[in-house]
Image 1: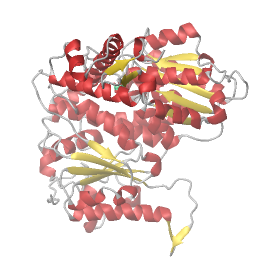
Image 2: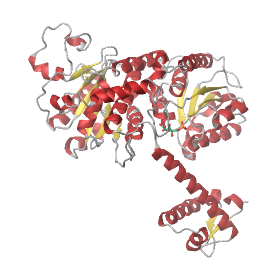
Image 3: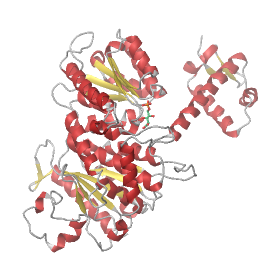
Image 4: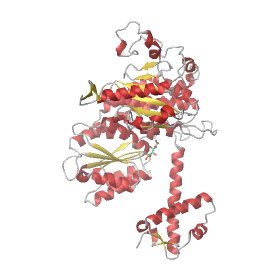
Length: 557
Ligand code: PA5
């Protein structure tokens, strides 16, 4: 897929305002050798974030064809921001853009948004200064977030990318119901368990993984003479089981999560803001960066709107069917969780089996990645020489962070090598016609990260509209939750029957009344797992090779 000659500029007036990279400000006409490259750069002047579309192999006329189709897309985005029910399957409004521009929120919503930001800042300050403190004295030093999906990935990214500084809590998370994984984190806290603030985040307040992590943390604390409530804070929807628990047990605080904010776009709500503030992130700058990008991506202009441009590029590259995966390669360790955050944002939003008219479709856009140049020694080999089924999104940060400055070779630092490897991989992929684009950030700070997250949130919204699906529901996630519930109910029934009378697997299937092959498999898999953990499950094979369970609930008496 070799880049074809471009026919028009991405920037309607390349010399205008801040759209030109600062490097070229002193130039009259940039050198002719650069003109093609410069035409394909789109620089957002407020944040300085720049998108380089020059290596996508997409001719300008292809973008041009989207000018008309994008008109109603822009219009519907305006309606969404004005409070339309943009999530029809759940009958909900979609309001994450209001979180960073409360003045645009429908009447009555702006106040709670502003108040929540103030409460978050105030609470975080009191915790960090030791005015809200653990029962045994001192101050909270560690944060352990219990949450999953959209209630974990954003906070994980933000704290890992930006956390630190005086008084900042160190970040940990329990984002699964794996008891061994949970224990590893909790035991790893050592003495700090007494000064660990537990932040339980669940919009629905009923997600089992999160509930289980919370219960495991509670038991762990109690086994050490501590209690969860004086060390716990909740972020959840009004009236949820979690909200009720936090209130009846007298937790330190509860922050709201509104039904018009989706989990995967909740990082600028209390879900992301509270852990960020506790971990030392500049919240105002984070929100300000997101707001700046929102302003840019609100423009109904394909030439100047980076999210619209990106959505069209995704559409062209994957022929509107997600035929190419997006590989996210940030050249900065602090951004290594960006691919996981984007994976959820994009795949949970776009991976849908019905369009907005209810017709069956197969939609999605696969996302994977980790970081450069690490991945050059992992999967980049395949990207260059193997299947041509992806496009790369490089993320490059111009200013180095705090670095040693050590010259590792002839006047070059490790950072120079990092950038060199980015250039090398970009060149190697481009030479093979492998489509790639680069997102350049002037620096990695709260403002830039807020802007990057907002850029992709809007891109997902535009792209979903282009392919005619609802980006804001997650029926597949709900289906998985229901199926797991059924399997657990079946597990209890197996134990009950085997406690009453030992059974071969075949007779157990008959006794359970199973007639379906898939259900029979589930029974087999459940028994296999319980037999591997007999002391805990109570299920074992008796001398006759029959399944036998001890006592009610399966546990050994
Ligand atoms: O993006 C989403 O909506 C999901 O990934 C949810 O965040 C996830 O299922 C957790 O849900 P909850 O916050 O209700 O516990």
